[in-house]
Image 1 (cartoon, rainbow, N blue to C red):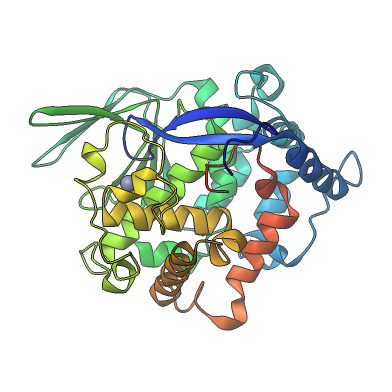
Image 2 (image 1 turned 120 degrees about the vertical axis):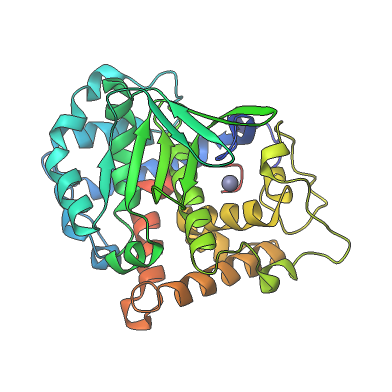
Length: 350
Ligand SMILES: [Zn+2]
């Protein structure tokens, strides 16, 4: 990365959990064009996508395949993954109505994973002992923009993983306002593992890579807590340099701060705010860019990614962790041979 002139654009974003500037993305137009060619190869006829590679062994392959062949889905994919496509130039009119079109696949996937998709049509409010979550209903435009990529990202997970995670619902709201004593802040996602057992997502987001990042980040918080009701991980924490200590938690990390490049072992500054945020960020990186995370030039990042991989393998040892299933190999194929690796908008870490 860095700030060379060949790199084209800088986009600031918010943290997955919180309402602050979170990461920046620098786009290399040359690189994106090269990657775009890889997408073209896959679309060998105008009418049908022919997915390549081992990712067809992913559990939900048939649903992914069916989804990809929906007319508006092809346009959606070409819109969001076209090189040099900025968020502003995304033409919503072209994919208007996609949510209705992909409803059969939404139903199939949620049924298969034993999950409920909740889209409240009235303002939503959830109160716990210590905080309140509030949000407005998602708009039709939100659903058209947000749900297709969410569905693609959800589809990589095997049934065994979702079952182990104990996640029961995905709740889609336009916005999420988190409040507690002396604090009120907007969130992009929220893992509510105590009562509703849901991942709550704010669908007003329009940066497609960020939608992906938030989703996997929140999934990790959920399973990180649910496995032993603790965020501790000594093996992971020990990978940090000896003189390092985490900040005051994600909640207090309000502003985007550029990562100090001399600080080894982190993919962004937000990761330095708390152990649980560091782990969730490494996880979203591992799921989003598995090859790059597992072979990272920063040795500590590489080891952290491998530690999270080990954790996930143990967590779902009959699904993701089962060697014969080759989940990670299939995921790498999915990311490299298909559209997601070609995303114009990836975090500052890819
Ligand atoms: Zn978080």
